[in-house]
Structure formats: C-alpha cells, structure tokens
Length: 390
Image (cartoon, rainbow, N blue to C red; front, top):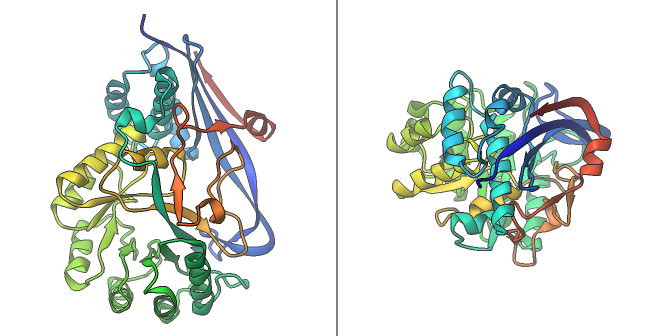
C-alpha cells in the first residue's frame, strides 16, 4: 500500500535576536547593542500512516497564509507524489506569488528521505558532500559595528583568516542620510584593497540604490575592484529584465538576479534575455526543493550557474546535488552579532564559525533534511497560530 498523508500541522513560533535592531525605516536588520528583535517562523509537520513525519521549519506569514489555503488538498494523498502535488499547488496558487508551496514541498522531501532512509541529496543524485561558504554580512549600521568602510574591510580580513573564500557586502540603507553612495563606493574599495587578492567578493545593495545611475556608479567601482558578482542593486527591486540587461552591457562585473521574482518561467526568461549572469534559487521561495532544482536545471541548460539564497538544511541538500553552483551563503554574519538562524536545531547551526578550517560546510547525511528539530523549544515559544488539517 502507498503511504498516505493523515494530518498536517503548522505552528507559528517566535525567537529573539540579541544586539540586533532595525535601521531607520525598520526593514533591514542591523547590529544595535542592547536591543533585541523578535522574529517569527513556522514549523510544518506532515503526518502519514507510516508513522513517519515530514518536517520543515522556516517560511513567513504570507507563505503560511498560502499553504493554509491548500493544505487540505494534501490530506489523504500519497506524500511521494511530489511532482503531482507541486503542479496542483502551482495552479491553485496562480493568483499569488506561490511562496506557500516551498515549506510543504520541503516537508514532503523530508518525508521521502526518512521513508527511504537516505538524505535528500542522495535521492536527487549526490554531486558533493562539502561546499565552500561565503560570509554574507548584516547591513551596514551606525552603531559601532559595520559602520564604516574600514569596519567592513576589517571584518573581511577576519573572515578570510577564518577560511572563508568569499565575502559579500550588504551596504547601508533605511534612511536618506544613510544612503550615501560615496560611502558604498569607499567600502568596496576598502574591502577590495584588504582582501581582493584572497577572496571572491560580492555586493548586494538589496535594492537600496535609488537610480540606475547610482547602480552604474557603484558597479564601476566593483569592476575596478574585480568583484565576483553584483546583486539586486537598485529600486527596480530585481524584477526588470530590460534594466539588468542594460546594466550587464555597461559593466564587467557579473550580475546575479532572480531572488525577487517567483516562478520557473520568468527565471528562464531572465536567462534567455541575457538579463543576468547567474540565476538565484531558494527552496523556500521557489516552490520547495522541487522548484529550486528546476531552476538549477534551467541554469545548467543555459550554461550558467545557479547560486542558492540564504543558509539552511534545504539549501545544503540542493547544493549537494547541483554541479553548477559555487558557494553556500552563510548569512547574516557580523563581528558582534549572531546569525539570524533560529535556535531550533540539534547538532546543526549556521553561524560565522560553522565552517571548517578550509572554509567549507558539510552536507547533513541523515535521512531527509538530515536535521533534528527541538520541538520542545518550538512548542514553548508558540505564538498562538496553530493550524491542523486532517
């Protein structure tokens, strides 16, 4: 008999980040001594009649709202028919950005790995079991942390000494006084001078730059410093093929796009229209492991690379099965603040010191995602939003 989904549970919980606040507008996390910030995530359990539960912790409230619309569809279905379920949920959520597919699909992959007693990357087809990480910083602050070009350069040197092979700047933002283009350019030069001969360097303004002209000016500084890629620079929000094709035509630094667009088809269009040099994929954002691996395959078909966004066990499993990818994003890191990873794992973490001496991270090799969640912590920090479907 085929396995059957008997019940789905979704639980919202919170956790606290110490010495972390937000910038002036409240959108970017920044180092702020003595401040604390509450974050909320969702924990999903897919129960089956096999006594095996698929699990995933992550997501956000818009994504949870979407999968709460469609969770009933999965009850009574075979959890191994992931491609069928992916297609049905894609159609059902066609009026939305479909971010609700990701957590459910990842939980189904976790079930499959446990069912077959294998890590997900083995089911996908293992290519590697270790991968280099790059240090991806918090945004620049005004609080004695990453508050100057020199501070970014010093931190880059610290990361290089730890073994990191790559370093990515998230610059300043959050208010008109903070959006100082010259300070961004000075940070690029300072980091390039400090470690440009030791590390691959990346820059991600996170769409803070106001104009195409500003993106071009900063991009030319990246060219001079030999940066590895340039990501989501300005207020087009990372969605215009035309704008990024024009940027590519005027710069030498490769462009990395598609973090902020949803859907396999439009990511394919970015590649086909030569509007990016790398594709971005995220199993949480892009329809789960099923969707993220489709993006990786599209990139391979175009002869380009895919870079997976953010850290996490699902990202590690995808990277292990992907030839045409280069780095694991250890984000967000800072010399004085911990990463934003929730404290819900046993014997797993994504922190600045989670790499080995060669700057590598290992792929979990246990069944499914290869991680064990601390459900006692999740239940103790539940915020009241619990949904059950059966």
